[in-house]
Image (cartoon, rainbow, N blue to C red; front, side, top):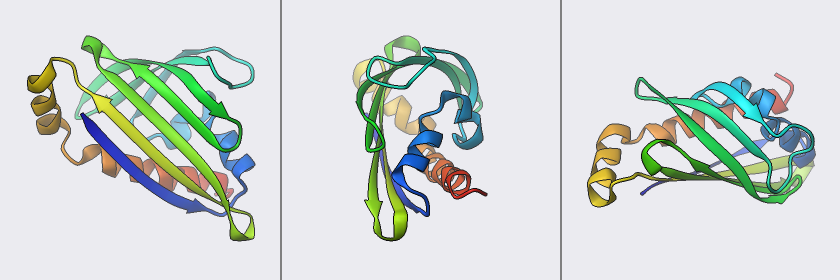
Length: 149
Protein backbone atom coordinates (compact mmCIF):
# COMPACT_ATOMS: atom_id res chain seq x y z
CA UNK A 1 0.00 0.00 0.00
CA UNK A 2 1.23 3.48 -0.87
CA UNK A 3 -0.21 6.55 0.87
CA UNK A 4 0.29 10.23 0.12
CA UNK A 5 -0.99 13.12 2.22
CA UNK A 6 -0.38 16.77 1.44
CA UNK A 7 -2.15 20.11 1.71
CA UNK A 8 -2.12 23.66 0.42
CA UNK A 9 -3.70 26.97 1.41
CA UNK A 10 -5.66 28.62 -1.40
CA UNK A 11 -6.80 32.25 -1.54
CA UNK A 12 -10.34 31.35 -2.57
CA UNK A 13 -13.46 30.21 -0.72
CA UNK A 14 -14.20 26.50 -0.25
CA UNK A 15 -17.09 26.88 -2.71
CA UNK A 16 -14.76 28.26 -5.39
CA UNK A 17 -12.12 25.58 -4.81
CA UNK A 18 -14.78 22.84 -4.77
CA UNK A 19 -16.25 24.03 -8.08
CA UNK A 20 -12.86 23.62 -9.76
CA UNK A 21 -11.65 20.45 -8.02
CA UNK A 22 -14.90 18.54 -8.50
CA UNK A 23 -15.50 19.42 -12.16
CA UNK A 24 -14.44 16.36 -14.21
CA UNK A 25 -14.03 18.58 -17.27
CA UNK A 26 -11.32 20.57 -15.39
CA UNK A 27 -9.13 17.58 -14.43
CA UNK A 28 -6.73 18.24 -17.30
CA UNK A 29 -6.25 21.78 -15.97
CA UNK A 30 -4.80 20.73 -12.63
CA UNK A 31 -4.17 16.98 -12.21
CA UNK A 32 -0.63 16.45 -13.51
CA UNK A 33 -1.01 12.72 -14.16
CA UNK A 34 -4.41 13.07 -15.89
CA UNK A 35 -4.35 12.18 -19.58
CA UNK A 36 -7.97 11.68 -20.64
CA UNK A 37 -11.52 11.76 -19.30
CA UNK A 38 -13.40 8.93 -20.98
CA UNK A 39 -16.80 9.41 -19.43
CA UNK A 40 -18.56 10.70 -16.35
CA UNK A 41 -22.06 10.66 -14.93
CA UNK A 42 -22.81 14.26 -15.87
CA UNK A 43 -24.94 16.66 -13.91
CA UNK A 44 -24.34 17.60 -10.30
CA UNK A 45 -21.50 15.77 -8.57
CA UNK A 46 -22.66 13.80 -5.53
CA UNK A 47 -22.47 10.40 -3.87
CA UNK A 48 -22.62 7.68 -6.51
CA UNK A 49 -21.16 9.90 -9.26
CA UNK A 50 -18.84 7.92 -11.53
CA UNK A 51 -16.09 8.73 -13.97
CA UNK A 52 -13.43 6.93 -15.93
CA UNK A 53 -10.08 8.49 -16.74
CA UNK A 54 -6.66 7.61 -18.03
CA UNK A 55 -3.76 8.46 -15.73
CA UNK A 56 -0.03 8.40 -16.50
CA UNK A 57 2.83 7.38 -14.17
CA UNK A 58 6.41 6.44 -15.07
CA UNK A 59 5.72 6.32 -18.78
CA UNK A 60 2.65 4.10 -18.47
CA UNK A 61 -0.97 5.05 -19.17
CA UNK A 62 -3.67 3.21 -17.25
CA UNK A 63 -7.41 3.54 -16.96
CA UNK A 64 -9.17 4.03 -13.59
CA UNK A 65 -12.90 3.82 -12.90
CA UNK A 66 -13.86 6.12 -10.00
CA UNK A 67 -16.96 6.30 -7.81
CA UNK A 68 -17.66 9.13 -5.39
CA UNK A 69 -18.48 7.27 -2.18
CA UNK A 70 -18.59 10.24 0.24
CA UNK A 71 -19.68 13.76 -0.62
CA UNK A 72 -20.28 16.73 1.66
CA UNK A 73 -20.48 19.57 -0.86
CA UNK A 74 -17.82 22.27 -0.48
CA UNK A 75 -16.14 20.30 2.35
CA UNK A 76 -15.30 16.66 1.70
CA UNK A 77 -15.10 14.15 -1.15
CA UNK A 78 -13.86 10.59 -1.21
CA UNK A 79 -13.38 8.75 -4.48
CA UNK A 80 -12.75 4.99 -4.73
CA UNK A 81 -11.07 3.78 -7.87
CA UNK A 82 -10.48 0.47 -9.61
CA UNK A 83 -7.54 0.15 -11.94
CA UNK A 84 -5.74 -2.53 -13.90
CA UNK A 85 -5.03 -5.97 -12.43
CA UNK A 86 -7.41 -5.46 -9.48
CA UNK A 87 -5.51 -2.44 -8.15
CA UNK A 88 -7.47 -0.05 -5.91
CA UNK A 89 -7.13 3.58 -5.00
CA UNK A 90 -8.82 6.03 -2.67
CA UNK A 91 -8.53 9.76 -3.14
CA UNK A 92 -9.86 12.16 -0.54
CA UNK A 93 -10.27 15.94 -0.55
CA UNK A 94 -10.99 17.95 2.62
CA UNK A 95 -11.70 21.67 2.28
CA UNK A 96 -11.56 23.77 5.42
CA UNK A 97 -12.33 27.48 5.52
CA UNK A 98 -9.50 29.53 7.02
CA UNK A 99 -9.13 33.22 7.78
CA UNK A 100 -9.60 35.83 5.08
CA UNK A 101 -11.93 33.76 2.85
CA UNK A 102 -9.19 31.22 2.13
CA UNK A 103 -9.30 27.43 2.03
CA UNK A 104 -7.03 24.71 3.36
CA UNK A 105 -7.17 21.87 0.80
CA UNK A 106 -6.07 18.55 2.31
CA UNK A 107 -5.40 15.73 -0.13
CA UNK A 108 -4.95 12.03 0.59
CA UNK A 109 -4.38 9.18 -1.84
CA UNK A 110 -4.04 5.51 -0.98
CA UNK A 111 -3.03 3.03 -3.66
CA UNK A 112 -3.22 -0.72 -3.10
CA UNK A 113 -1.29 -2.76 -5.63
CA UNK A 114 -2.50 -6.20 -6.72
CA UNK A 115 -0.58 -9.43 -6.06
CA UNK A 116 -0.14 -9.12 -2.28
CA UNK A 117 3.38 -8.61 -0.89
CA UNK A 118 5.05 -8.95 -4.30
CA UNK A 119 2.81 -6.22 -5.71
CA UNK A 120 3.60 -3.94 -2.75
CA UNK A 121 7.35 -4.32 -3.33
CA UNK A 122 6.94 -3.70 -7.07
CA UNK A 123 4.77 -0.66 -6.40
CA UNK A 124 7.43 0.91 -4.13
CA UNK A 125 10.16 0.18 -6.68
CA UNK A 126 8.20 1.57 -9.64
CA UNK A 127 6.54 4.55 -8.02
CA UNK A 128 8.89 5.62 -5.20
CA UNK A 129 8.34 9.25 -4.16
CA UNK A 130 6.63 10.14 -7.43
CA UNK A 131 3.03 10.27 -6.10
CA UNK A 132 3.97 12.92 -3.48
CA UNK A 133 5.74 15.10 -6.05
CA UNK A 134 2.82 14.78 -8.47
CA UNK A 135 0.27 15.50 -5.72
CA UNK A 136 2.15 18.65 -4.68
CA UNK A 137 2.45 19.78 -8.31
CA UNK A 138 -1.28 19.16 -8.86
CA UNK A 139 -2.23 21.16 -5.78
CA UNK A 140 -0.06 24.07 -6.93
CA UNK A 141 -1.93 24.03 -10.25
CA UNK A 142 -5.30 23.85 -8.45
CA UNK A 143 -4.26 26.83 -6.30
CA UNK A 144 -3.37 28.87 -9.38
CA UNK A 145 -6.69 28.03 -11.08
CA UNK A 146 -8.85 28.70 -8.02
CA UNK A 147 -7.09 31.98 -7.34
CA UNK A 148 -7.88 33.11 -10.87
CA UNK A 149 -4.42 32.62 -12.34
